[in-house]
Image 1 (cartoon, rainbow, N blue to C red):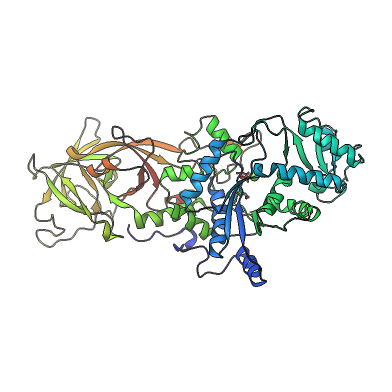
Image 2: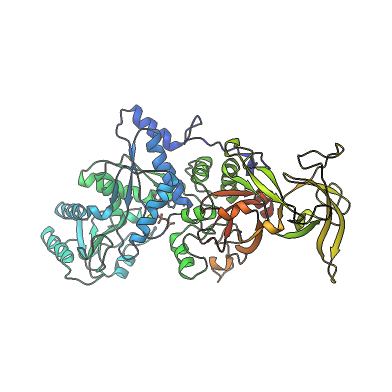
Length: 569
Ligand code: ATP
Ligand code: MG
């Protein structure tokens, strides 16, 4: 169990820095070309909208943006894309910062698109003055209808020919709060029959009488994403504006604003977003799960959020290694959830201390061990890391073993406990099953066993060897704790795969969290949240954030073996 786990698909992930010694991905090629052509001051940014918590997809984007800047001597900014006051909140801002830092990254500067509202407004006026923007009084519906379709050209707005002066006045009045929400918009004057629908006079500003979490009631018009993003990049002199593929249709517009405003030429590059099997990564839908109480919160260990993974026991290294392992692609694909689990298993194997815990207990009475006697055996904390030393585990006449470690009529090749058979109790004696005790219904309630008293140092009284080693906990020394076992949040590989009339929510897994209990060895009563343990032969666990000294709760981070890909095949 101490060997590095096998990866699904036979890929070996190495704990290395981004791209270290490997073939470089296409983004790195772009940056290398940029540097070779004399490009300086490499600058990237990570631009979250503060309308939800970050998820594992964002983690990939963070690793790319911060990782590339770090590797090639550049800087990466954190920019909050806060142009939609209705959905945004400081709670999200704080959570996003916490998650990025937890992942191990530091931004050069922290900026907000809202820092640039005044500049963006001036640029909108500049476009009006250049005859490249106009105020439109059409209703939202009219605008939508008149935009045409992919095959049908759009119809120009009756207000498209307004004079520069009229547009300036109307736009100033929009800002001054003279009109109701939705009454007017500012649009770019591009081409209503452009093959790219986004170029058909896109909306630059809308009226929204809503308080903004940073600018308060200063503004009642807000720029659209397209009008804010590229210009914000330009202000920050972002050289490589890296985003996900769905933005490729926005690129012509991104370039159009930069060209018409004659500002710093940032460039946008797209990569494939991360999709994971059994996982949903839309913030809108994750928010729904939180609001409807389908999960315990944004940091529920079943959520694909960074804080959920953290609470579940994932390490920053494991998430970074995962991002590295899956690489950067130009085409959308879906990654097997088993790969993420592989990465955490591999890291935890390295760092987690070992402990003994019994989840499904069967009592063993050692009949040839004196009542009241108590010995301490020395247990290795982590065979992968001798530096963390050893601890003592108490041994007494009454023990718990795992029910699955005993079988009355076992198949051939079963090395665990059976009537008349012998196993090694980890770190302690050889144990032989002498008698099986049952209740009236015939269920096994207890095993009466003997130990070989000369086997406590790993040997035996006559040199015999046994193949099976099982874990155990001394009954009077055991603490009962709550254990939460997690399964994927969705029953389908693709949560959107549902029958007509049904929604993705019907695919929620009713067994995504199984609450049970365990008996744990004494040292685990000191477990601190965030510190991972391997419960020997059972899985990786860590104390939950809800755990208290009176009521200890452990989350299973991941099983020891790749049971997942097997199960889903
Ligand atoms: P969602 O669709 O989950 O709501 P979003 O794209 O609206 O996410 P943003 O806050 O706008 O979320 O995203 C910040 C950055 O993270 C963007 O550059 C976006 O392209 C990137 N990103 C979002 N989701 C993923 C993903 N699944 N894989 C990789 N990058 C992602
Ligand atoms: Mg977005």
